[in-house]
Image (cartoon, rainbow, N blue to C red; front, side, top):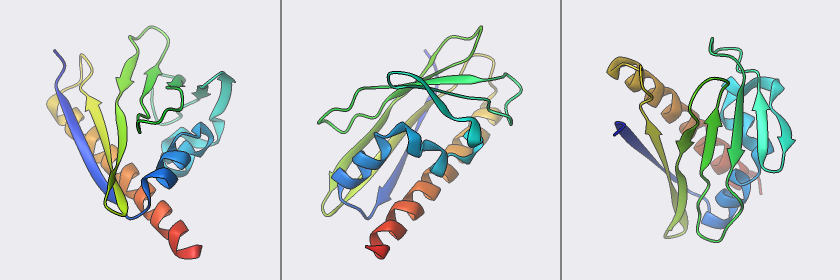
Length: 139
């Protein structure tokens, strides 16, 4: 069994707005800058990126279909590696919402690397929170 960490971020935006933004794959580089400008569609709900900061090479991300349950899971794969499921959920919390991101420790990744990767993901989620809450202020 893989070790996992779940990160929760509260966002002061209606759950429907956050879900709509996150369910559009083209928005992902706005809160995950490591994907860079090479993030492009390659099929239905599938995108690819060069991932210049990752020595393992390009990656493909397959997104789950839009749904009414707040499920935003996606799967990351690279040539020669097992795909990694990334469970992502958004659910209402009064007038705002909570976003939960579960990160799995891949085989061969040390506990120290896991903590570093979790911190990176947390930073990305805080970027997303700031982006969506600022969007609310501009409306």
